[in-house]
Image (cartoon, rainbow over all chains, first blue to last red; front, side, top):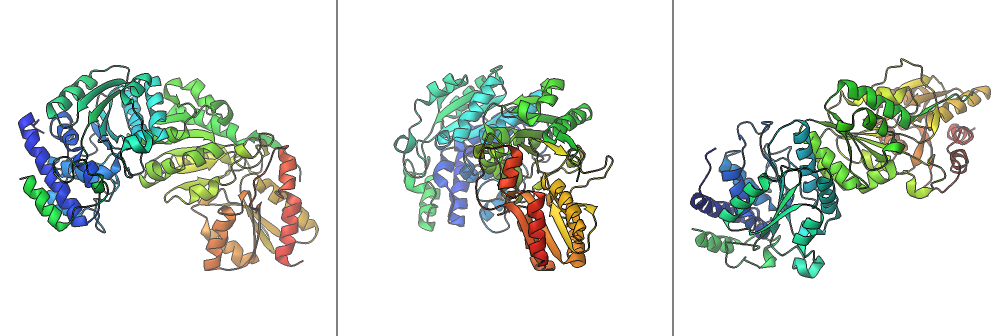
Length: 272
Length: 313
C-alpha cells in the first residue's frame, strides 16, 4: 500500500475519528475516549509504517499490530477498514449481535486482528512471543504492541518487560498511549506509575517520549525504534483522552460511555 | 494386586518431548523456572535453541506461548500444575482458549501425591478450571505407557490441550503398544455389577480394588478415562447400560473433576447409581504421598467401601 504523507495522515486521522464517533454512537456503547487518544498512533502505523496485505491477512512476512488496550477497538477497526481489510460500511455493526466487530478485538472473528484482547495486560507477552517466533524463523518483520497507561498497573506487563529485555528481543516496539486516565479516574490518582521512562529504562528497554498526536514525531520515533538491536523498544506517547472532540478532551466521563445522538452530531461537525 | 512401579508421568513426558523435538522443528518448549522438576529440562539439554525459560512468571509464560503459536509454533509449556493453572488462568482463557491457539499445557505435580511440600504446591482444582474453558482438551494419563502416547497424540490435534502429570513413580497399568486416542477411554477390566471410571493415580487403585471385589463375588470393570474432555460418552453409556452402577475415582477435588463430568453426562442420558472417590472439598497437607492418599481416601480400600455402598451391599 502507498505510504501516506504527514498531511494525508492528518486527513486520515480525522476520518478515523469520525468513524469512532459514529460507531460508538450507533452502538450506544464502547470506549470513545481511549479510542480517540490512539488515532494518530494507529494512523501512522496502518497508513505509513506497517507492511501488510489485507487480501492475505496471514501473509507470513507481515508486520503485526497487537491492540493490547482492547477497549480501543473502534480506532483499530476504523484503521483496518480504511486499510482495506473490510468494507467501512461494516463499522456500523460494531458491538451488534453477529458482528465480526466484537466489543473487544477477536482474532477468530475478524481476519487481520492478531490477538484477542480486552483483559488488560496480556498484549505485551503475546507480542514478545510473536517476535521470538520471528527470530527463530529468521524473519525481519516488526511487532507493534499498543498499550496504555492503565495497563502499566498490570503485573503481567512488567513480567513481559523483564523477560523480553533479558532475551534481547528486538523488532518489538511497544507504543504506550499515555492518555493519563483509567476507568475510575486519572492514572496519577488511582495507581501512579510514574516515572515511566525511568522504569522502562531500568528494565533495559530503549525508551523514547513523544507527543502522541504529532504524526511526524510518531514516524520519526518508530523509525528510530526499528533500528534498535538486541533490545526491545518502547515509545511513550503523551496523548489526550478524547482528542479531537472539544467536549471529550480530558473528560473521563467518555472513558466507557458513548456519545448521545446529539453529541454525535456536534462531534461530527467539529470533525468536518 | 502386585504394584510394579514404572517412571513418574513427568519423566515419561520429558522423554516424549525429546523424541518429538527430533522430528518436529516447530515445537518450542517453555518453562517457568521449574524445568528440572517438570522434566522439560530433558528437551532443554537437547535443543537449547528451542527452549525458553521465562523465569518465575506464569502469566507471561502463557502469553508468550500464545504469541509463538500465532506464528505457527507449537509451544509445550510446563510448570507445577498448581502455579501454572491458577496464575495463568486468565491468560489461558483469553490468549489461548478464546484465541483458539495451539498451545500444549503440561502441569506437573498434579494432585496430593506431591507429598511433603504440602498444600500450596498441590493442584486439586486444575481439572475443574481447565475443563471450564471452551475448546480445551484435558488429559490425565496414569503411567509411563499412556503418557508419551498421549503427548504424541496432542500433535494431531491443533488446538489447546492440558495434560496433568504427577511427581512420584507410578505403577505401570497399560501393556506396551496399547493404542491411545484423545477422547477414547481404555477398558482395562470388564465387569458386570459395577464400572469404576478412573484416571491418573487412581487407575491402579481401581484395578486393585476390582481384583479384591472379585474375591468377594462382585464383578467390577475398570476404565482408564484419561481424557476428561472431550469425555468418551459412547463408552460411558455402554458401561452404564451394562452395569447400572458407576463409581468415579480421581486425585482431584470432588467439585468439577472427572466425577462431575461423568455425572453431568449420565444424568441426562442414562441416570444410574453413582459413587465418587475424590478429595472432599478440603485442602490437603504435608506428608508422605501414601499417607496422604490414605488420609484423603484415595485408595483401593475406600474404592471398595464406596463400591459396596453404591451396590447397596
